[in-house]
Length: 508
Image (cartoon, rainbow, N blue to C red; front, side, top):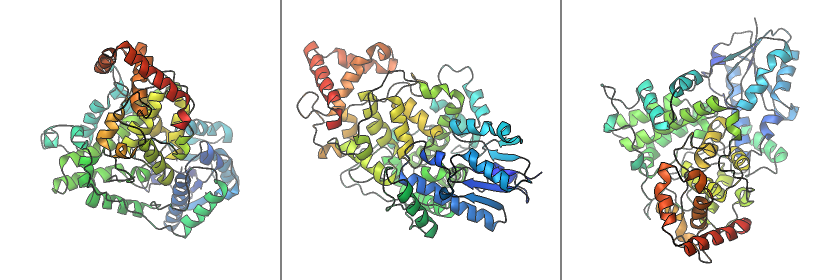
C-alpha cells in the first residue's frame, strides 16, 4: 500500500513521525502554496526561511533515496489540498495519505476533510517532536482551577529528568531562577551576536521569488542571513551555548539601544520549523551547566522557555481551540496604529522593538511582551488585529505558539486562563530593564505634562477603565490602591491626558 506522505513547512525534521513510517514506494510531498504564504501578511524573512529550508530539506530526502515531489510557488497551487490533489493525479498508484499532526488548528481542519475529498484513508500521526502530547496536557489540566505554567513546568522537569539530582530534586535547590534572569543592563554591556549565514544559490533564488511576489510584505529580502538547513541550525545553537548562554542567564530580560539580539539564541526560528530538536537543545544546555561552563540561572532559564513555556502554550492551544481565538475579555477594539508596521514613532522603546522586528523578523520575548504587547494592552488595541500582527511579522510565529502568548499573556483577553494578572506596566519597568528611555522624546518620570511617557499615561487609564473587571484580581490590589490614593483632580488629569493620547495615537 503506497502512500502520499505530506510534509508541512514547519515539519522539516529527519525524525518526523511520518518520515519514520515511509516505505520505498511512498511519495513524499512538499509544496509552497499560496494560502499558507498569504493568510496573513508574513514577513519576507519568514517566507524566505520556510521556502529555502523546504527546498534544502527536499534535496536531503532525495539524497537519502526518498521519492520526493516538490511543488514550488511558481506552479500556482492555491492551497495544500490542491497540491495534494495534483500529486495524487500524478501518482495514481497511491492509495492512502499520511502526515504528522498539523501545528495550526486552521490547517488541521482543512486536512481533516481530505478523506472525504479524495476518498482515500488519511493517517495522521502524533507529532512526538514535542515532549507533551495533547492527551498528556489534558490529563494534567483536568480538574485544575488554574492552569499555571510553573506547575506544568515542574511536571515536565520530572518527566524529562532535566536539571534534577539523583533524588529527583532540582539542581541548585529550586525549580525556577526567573528572578536571577532580570538584571538591568549596565552601560558598558557588550552584545554577542548570533551566528549568521551567507545565502547560497537556493536561498538567493527564493529571495528573488519573495521580492517579486511579496513586495508589499514587511521587511526586506536583501538582509536575510538565517540558517536554512539542520546543519546550519545546529551550528547556530552550538555558538549560542559556547558564546552567548553564560550572559543570557543574567540579561535574559534586558534591552539595549540598537542591539536587537543581545545574548539571545534566535533558535526559536529554527526549532519551530523543525530544523532543531528540543531534546538535543536541552541536553546541550544541561551539559554546559554540568561542565561548569554556565551558571544555573542561564541553564534553567533557557530550559524553562523550551519545556515550560513552549510546551505549555501548545498544550493550552489544542485544549482550548477553536473558541480560544475569539476571546476578548477586556473588549479591546481600537484599531492597530500604523507605526506597528513601520516603527515611525517618537516612543523610543516602540521604535526599537518594531524596527528590529521589521528588519530581522525577530525581537526577543520582553520586547514582545513588555513593549509592543504592553502598549497594545494599555491602549486597548483590537485583539484580532494584534494577534494577526504577531503572527505575520515574526519568523518563529505559528498560531499554536503565537496565539496563547499574545491573546493570553500580552493582552489578558482570556480572563486569566494563562496569566494570573495582566502584564500591564508603566514606563518605569522599561526604564529599569533598558536604556531606551535615555534616548526618548518622552519623559519617563512624567505622567501628565506635554511630553509625558505614553506608557505612564495609558497605564493609569487602563486601570481606571477596566476596574470593574480587574478590581477584584488579587494581584492587582496594590496597583488599584495606588490609583485610589491619587486625588480626584490628579485622576482626572491622567484620564484627560490619556484621552488626548488615544485620539492622536498615530502621532505618538
